[in-house]
Image (spheres, rainbow, N blue to C red):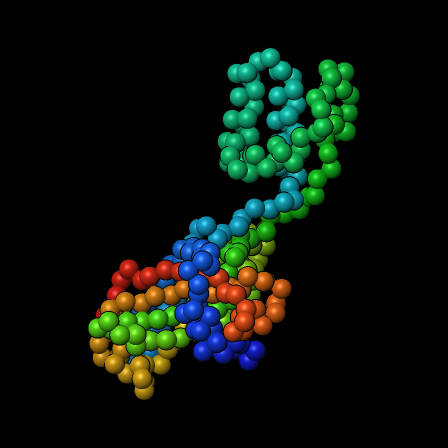
Length: 267
């Protein structure tokens, strides 16, 4: 489980979202959850996965290959100022290799100010292009994560499950770093240590993206009957400067992630 030694008390968090004013703007972004009982049915295990809207795979630096392709695109475009067919073909060639989004970023990054003259194109064309950061692409990350997950379970119209966990990191790696293939295991899922939480339950617990709830005491009835509905949503303060007081009774809270399980947790 994540280190909750500095976590805000459960009752404080619950008071804040329970008393949200109707004038408070609320943004709900999707997440996916998976649920399963342990083999002995004495624990409820919940996994939380970011949705595609949270995935940031954009890399500002360009690779040497991207620079060469982008420069070739602009040179081909400049060489045909009045030939729309050729200009479209230059763009199509760039998109064919990089995809539309990355091609747009590469073209934008390498576009110089103004249009070179025919004489400029006969000289050292590399001087026509702006300097850009160069580097290998990093792994995709999930961003805009909440500070806490709140988990509610309902049975026969009554809330019988009530848990809160903290999310220690502001973003999480969701894909392996393909620039370092030696970091990938020889067997098993092709993920490195940073993305291990996506396939390993214990690692997900440490990232605040999973719960392992003992079904004892007040939760014993869940062990026998399951749940009719499971709701998971995230809380994030208005101020992300790291001040826990932002979630204190006087501080505003904005619900920014949420979902309802579409499959009831049943026996």
